[in-house]
Length: 273
Image (cartoon, rainbow, N blue to C red):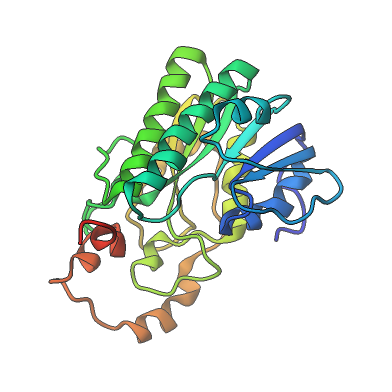
């Protein structure tokens, strides 16, 4: 965790959805430093509320509950929903109905900024020998990536029509350290995740912007030049882990789709098998 907050700007109340998930647990103590009250929600049980926290266990597919959840919120960090390749039904409820309900609740409650956790899997069928940017066409690698592409379009509609700003963050691989050759290009440290989210919350103007959630890795599939107005400057790099990762995976099988495409294992995951 960073020793000091990145900005003196603080909010009265931030909402963190998906707070019981892996990255939700990472961001929970970090976001508290930027607000007087942090509202936490997940469909799964949450750890007990600490000082300055509000915990709400609920399902974003429940529209009336979503309306209540967004009351009195200054901005949203939306990590909620399904985060892996699954069958259609849970993805539909969590990532299609849930994201629509979230934006409708934001509109009705006057919430004007959302950090939307999208995914690199929106772009998963681009090849690893290609570099994509914010204007590259989506090429989802499965139902999960498809649902995140839908969420990005919902966010754009609500910006164009209602002025709700969204920073779309196509998260790469946010784990304690990279473990594969692919992750040397997609890794996002937890500290850089915090830097990215806080940049999106405090940038003067966001509009509808796409940024790739990666650290300062020497190799990368993603070009963030078109999101420099957000002010995100990564400080960490996967390259510190490169020797051990390359020693564990010295060769690449170019007949294996999971080694060819940016989506990695997701290009073969799910019910398509």
